[in-house]
Each structure stands twice: as C-alpha cells, then as structure tokens.
Length: 317
Length: 251
View 1: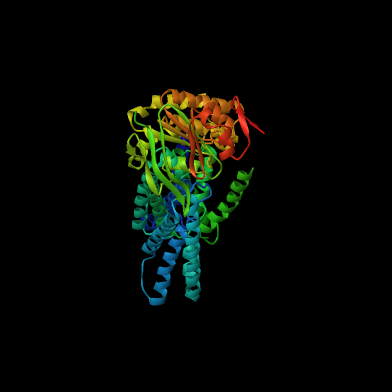
View 2: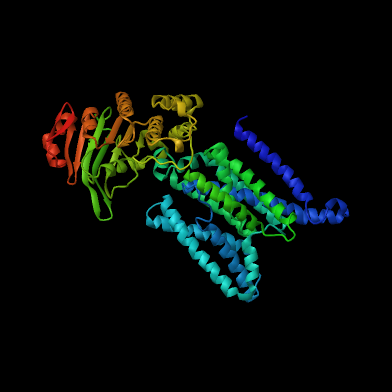
C-alpha cells in the first residue's frame, strides 16, 4: 500500500473512534440512563448529530477541492463564488418571511435554490464576458456574493428584533437535525463524492487552465459544468441544513496537499475523510468542553483563521 | 499531395481590431515551419486559431480535409498539441504527474495501456533531462525547468502537429539547442511543427520554412535562407543588416 492509502486507513479508523467517543460524550451519560430514554437520546440527538458532522464536513471539504481546482486557485472555496452567501440569503429570506407573515416556509429548499441561483448568475455573467476562465468566474462570483451579502444585511436590518434567529442560523450549528434529513444529506453527499471522484483526473489538468485542458483533449465545458454543479450541490445542501460553517473547505484540502501533493485523485478522498474528522472533532468539543455550547461555525472559523495565515505565509516563503 | 493543414481565408478579430485579415496558408507534413514578424502581426493569434483557442470570425481551417471544429476534443488532442508561452502552475504537481497529463487523450483505450503510458512518459522525461526531478513539485523548479517539463508533456501527447509559441524562452543555450534537435526528430518522423519565434538566428538556423507576417498579412513565405534576407529585414523589421552564416549582423 502506498502512503496515501495508509493515511486514509488511519483517518477512517480515527473517524470511527471519534464517532464512538462523540456518541458517548454529552451532558448526560447514556449508560446511566434507563434503556428507553437512552435509546431516544441516541437515535434522536446523538447519532443524527454525529452523522451530520461527518456528512457536512465531507461535503464542505470535497466542494473545496473541486472549487480550488476549477478556479485554479488554492485559496478558493464556496465563499469565493458567493455560493454560501446565496444559500444563507435564501435561508434568511425564508426565516424573515416566516416571522413577518407568520408563514412556515422551510429554510432548506430556499437555501438550496438560492445557491443554484448564485451559480447560474455567476456562470451566466462569465459567459457573457467571454468564457469560463477562472478570472471571469472569480470576478463574477465576488460581485454576485457581495450582492447577496448586502441582501442578507438588508434582511437582518428589516427583521429588527427578530434578528436573533437569523444570526443563530448563520453562525452554523449541527444540533437537533432530524434523522431523515441527515440521511438525505448523507445520500446526496455520497452521490456528489462519487461524481467528484469520477472527474479527479480532469480536475488535475483543469488547474493548468482552460486552454491547457482543451489542448490535451478534455471536454472542458462539460466537465466544468458537471463539477461546478456537484460543488454547488454539496455546499448548498450542507449550508441549508447547518448554516455557515467556515474554513473547512479551505483548510482541509490544503492540509492534505501538504502531506501528499497536488494529485486530486489522492487529495479528494483524503479531504472527505479529514473534513469529517475535523468537523466532528470541532462539534464534539463545542458541546462538551465549554459551559455554554458555542456554534461550531464559530470554532471552525477561529481555528481556520490562524491556519489560513499559516498557509498564506508559507506560500510567500 | 494533400496539404496536412490548410488555412483558408481566415479573419481573426478582437472586437473591431482585426489582427489577421483574410489569411490563407498551407502546411505540409514533415517540416518545421517558423512564423516570424514584428509585434502585433498576429503570429500568436494564428497559432491560437489553429489550436482552436480562438475561433476565426470568418474562413476556416482544415486538417486532413476536415474542418478542425468538427474534431472531438480527444481526437483533436491526438492530432495537435500546443506548447504555450505561459506555463504557470499553481498547485505542486510533480514532473511525473504533469508530463502524464499529456497522455490524457489516450487513456482508456489500447494505446493508453499502462506499459505504453509509462514508456512514453518516462522517455520524454529522460530526453528533457528531468529524470532527477521526477518526483519534484514543479512549483519549486526554475522557469527553464518548468518549460522543459511542459515540453515533455507536449511530446508525450504524441500528436501529428506540434504548435510552439516561443518555445523554451527561459532555457539555457544547451537546452534550447536540444529542444530544436528534439523537434527535428519529430519532424523526421513525419510530423508537422509550426513555431512562432522572435530570435531570427534560431529561425534561420533551425526552421525548414519561414512565414513572415506583418500587419498587412503575409510578407513572404518559403525556404528560410531565401525568404529571410536583407530586404525582409528592412521591410518588415525596419532594421538595416544582413545574415552571415545565419547570424544577424546589424549595420
């Protein structure tokens, strides 16, 4: 077995051990409870939360690998393209309408629809400008992302006193997710991962740019769109369920590249595993170590920020 | 004999600015063509039109009698490869990984069998003196070494036509000469090489035929030492001088 296989096996083992610990850990000790109550807590609270952390972590890391490749930029992720901002805007729009008009619109479909809307606008703008080169796509993404961020601020200011529910949603958390939604998330993440793995070789070449990719025989427009839709789906579904959880998509693929190089055939599976390990660890820490549970999105960003600086300085050197 | 590559009345424009206006040219197999001319004469645009990077606004380009835009991406990659001027890599791919990318079009069929794959890739790496760097990330290599890696990738693509824009501009003289020797080897196998270059000495010394472009179109085309002469220097490049044993002597 080669080095990256060993690392993957290690990460998988680590993920299983962590899952076991995470299920045990919490405010109450499952072993000390009556079996019925313990079972309810296990199936309704602990297990969905652990699975959600694993799936969301994998989804964000996988979409990070795809977007960094497509945009030929090791520092890109779903925020660069405004996908996450779009998703957040969609969810907050649903929350806002629910509060103002006493509706009960589901946040999740809103978030997903707006993630796709963002990418349609981004790709449309890039095409109108000429082609799907990374410069065009990044500029279109920044413009679209800022627009939806502004929209988000507008919603917050209009929400007035009810802004708290939006803010809490935006900070990202993995608590109290219903099991059926978590399973749907798991299925979509798995399908997305399979599609992403199918095109890792193409993704490697696309990092050299559109023209180089076309020269060696890649059907760029097709591969680009398939991979972009995959990344948006993964980000959209994760954001729609858990809000904004930052830096996983950025930091995890980077960490993998430090150990095994740039080949996405190795980076992709390792990132999916490491993303799951990272988010599960972060989530378990936020709900056990501290007196008051903090949103996991805050922790990932607080850990991710300094790491980002490390990467940044490392690149300069 | 049918010309391998035939350019028929193409016009290429950026906005309203026509860089190539109604240009026609034929290229034959087994020759190394140089395209020379002053800045802005449309040399690179011509290569980009042949490589399908740019689509001409009128006219068409035929390869073996068929319009180039009728070829599927993989099929065209087996017919034509392109050594570009810009070779920037943002991710730390190793030399082996990068050169292997040139074999993409062959993967999944017989010619792309593993043994064949490794043979071609390793051979091209060795020819370009990169064997010691095989697992080294290209992001840690010098400009000239990166260009050689890209050249090895282009050769690994094993296409009938090789386009070269400026070639190894950052390489030392030893590797520049070696680069031309390798291109000559490919030409001997019956391939067609079309190269844009600025160095008139190299153009005259190594190219079988030259096409001289200026803003008006084709100034002249033919055997290198016949077409690139005192008159052409004066008319196209606006310098007074002549060639002595291919070396350009300015007055």
